[in-house]
Length: 264
Image 1 (tube, rainbow, N blue to C red):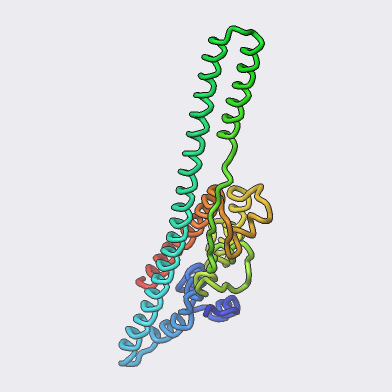
Image 2 (cartoon, one colour):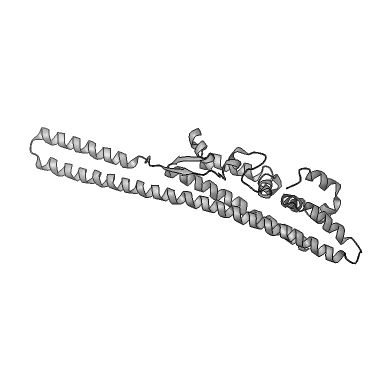
């Protein structure tokens, strides 16, 4: 588990801050290897004969933890990708049903319009022709309007393990994310500008660009246990999952920075 009082430790222990950047040290704390780094620095300053073996052992412990972290990142990214693909597949199914519906209504509107034109040309009685023309026009416009309106087709879609929920509700501890990844997503230093955390920025992007204008019921659908989804709702969910997956994968870049610092 990451240490809660890491800032106090960094102020006291100058050996860590002289060798590693604050960014690398906070990442090390996220992985739980900050004590190992302190022990490694202490061993490197030792003149004992067996210190070389201890140093190599400590390096191996650190690398094992880094490998475990990389595995957690890959596993979570794969889960996010799987959930996004699941939502997109069902959304595509609903889109195809909507396309069939629109195509049928459009064909009916065209056929009815053509039939109305022919009928009014063949009917010699002026009053009857007008009635047929008006009636056909109204029906054709009705079919065209139905084609233009959005579909209400929906499917039951459930997600008991909702990877979006903790990002939206911002709890101090996550029930679905590993402690290391949750620490990374909620530490300001890992964001681009360092003003807000990655989880905060991700939530803000969702609110501004993905679910802007949605109702409270829709938000409860996205960030709850699931329910009846329409195609647009599924596309929104897949979009949010993809954004989150990109943020999780970006941790690998920070891992690379720490590994380079270790090799130096």
